[in-house]
Length: 636
Image (cartoon, rainbow, N blue to C red; front, side, top):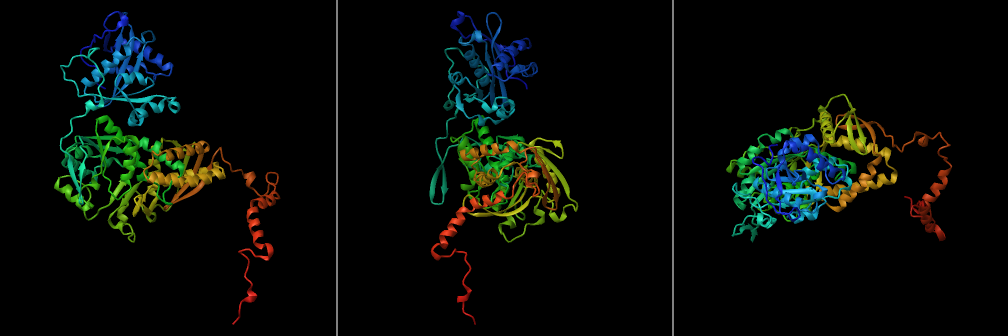
């Protein structure tokens, strides 16, 4: 990292009453300051106020540190500015020596940091802190930590206090960058910058939108973050947004395992289409760990077959889209979902849950394009390169969990899918003639190893995808009920997910008691609905997840499966927490289970059925299942 505080040291002449009018020396850190910074930061870390730092970590980021020294030339305060992007930075490791607290050192250092951030064209500052009132006095306001998921993953995931974290996320939207000749702020002249001051003056005239016979006013949008894939729909949206809204377009693309080929030339394509920038984030680990595995642990399957590969991905993409919008100072988000499908709901429910102030643009609900053929024509007219053709049009969605196919000949449920349509799996007929054994290890419901090799969740899924694809595992052809009320047909390839679901299900059969397992099966239907409907951030889904997490505490062990021509066959299972006992189950051990006890159990268990039948036969009546009196039937 190049550092923020390059060039001539800065000495700010802030006047503090407690040191008798002497100036405060605030300057960029130097090599000789490392021991003092390390001592000050780690002293706060021992109290649990900050994350600990090392000499190496401070040395590597030395240009990003700012320190304050007193008259004795001792470091009494320090802070670091950590950049996540050219316009987003975190206030990190703010520490003030105990003897200097209450004297204004922290607030003065913060003013200098904000000034430098503005001078470096940083647009958004954020922090996770317990000192909320301190940051509010500096102009920050409270926000949601999920707005900055990269911070949460990089630091918070390794913090021992993550389960009981009491820190609050705060954010400051800065004003326009300062000119190079701008002077240092004075104590009397400095003031926090409000978010309203950071917004540009909107256009005076609203943009009118005609829908049928109704004329609607489009919202004024200055900067929009588009969920971008480089496919047909989102490719034509970039020039359409610029033409119809006159706004800056930032393309955001999430790498969730759709394949490296999807990103070849993606940035160039987005920029050529008119985007001001293209942001690509690798979310594969987060997708596997925080979305796919929890869903698998729940056993969620929609309408008996669908493993929810598209449904579960949309909330993650939308979550990061909101985070990018916050970081880039955008006032709107956009997506390429049609007005008839489920994905529009999944994206927009996430927007509402995480930042309801963002404007939402859904071009498919506004424009005159009504088919993929129209979109292809629009792309040609605007010189946007796309891979689809009118002769072979399939709408595909790919990620590390699955590959889906819609459109084309699939729109008629009577048509069999073309063999050439499948891209991920071989047909079962063409799969190897010999079965292959795979062993999957779990710890507390989390898959941890394949065939004895320890792997992180994302790599577990990728490994099982390769094995399943080879053996034709995970193909389904489904006519499903969309959320919006109509039916649609989709063909899905989910090789690794199918194997993982089967293995996890078998381990649960060993480790969960009957009542818990049966209730969990009922709950899984509702969990699947919530996921399919885009309600991932709904309180109910999160509450169901808490129940699922509790059930996974004993799901440790291994499952051995046989893969053969599209089939997943159980070949063995083991768990140290197994509730299955051979000596309980055998019919030859009377000292474990006395079969004579069954009579009393059956009497009590069937008592309500017996009472009903007794009521029916009382006073000469008959039960509803009594045989008819054949003597009354006439014979020929």
